[in-house]
Image (cartoon, rainbow, N blue to C red; front, top):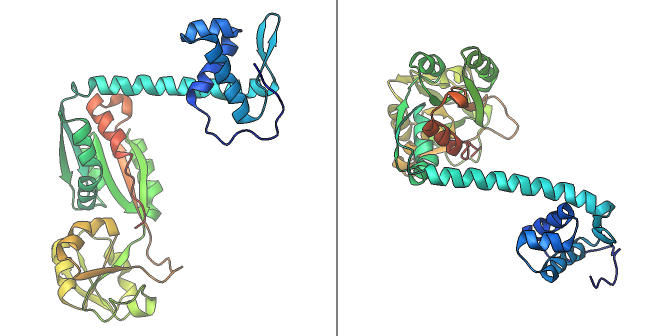
Length: 323
């Protein structure tokens, strides 16, 4: 094969191509360059050059010619095992993708997703546009629930197929176990640490982070189904209990009161108020605010329809990340 040195310490810096691995594996499987070339519909010289290029890239001899054909070297065996696995995985991937693309036009129907209001906004900005583009025949219906503490009970009682909820980190394992006992699957979908919401005219709004001492001088505003009451002891007191999240945010924007929110839960309100409110973390290292865990809940995948399975797979591509 025209090699000058079978035992280079370093290979070329070029990237290994998939075709090189495919050609190498086929050569080992067939036991000869001629048989592999016929199987791959390429010339024997082109196949030989491809394998030689792979050896040069890796800096090691992979195949030795014998009277009975070819056999892999020690390093050839190692490369063969890994390459064979990659090729098998790629072919499985190709089959799945081609199957999904062929059926995308056939997938039709309604998929109902129960979610917290914050998850409704989050999905609308991330997964939903991709779902509608990939599967135009699927109609998505979002069903917001205002009480994240009762989200699981509500989901189970409604006979739901797919949902996105939130809970505090210290109750996540209990909720996951409860879902499992009810025959549902509860998947971790991301974690966020709550922050303090202040109006931009608040004297503390210019801070990069807030201390507990600064919190103790603020009045907390919250609404009925909110995580904020848990943190009331950190504040001076309660200024007001409002009927909904929107009224809380607007009150904070016009007064010196404060609120506590997971960042994703007020994306829409932050956008609408355009700089009239600011979201601030606590000082670095202060873990007074227990993180919020977001979760996906659904029936076992084998019990879901094909439409629900595709929607679930796409949603998984967009987990919550700490802002």
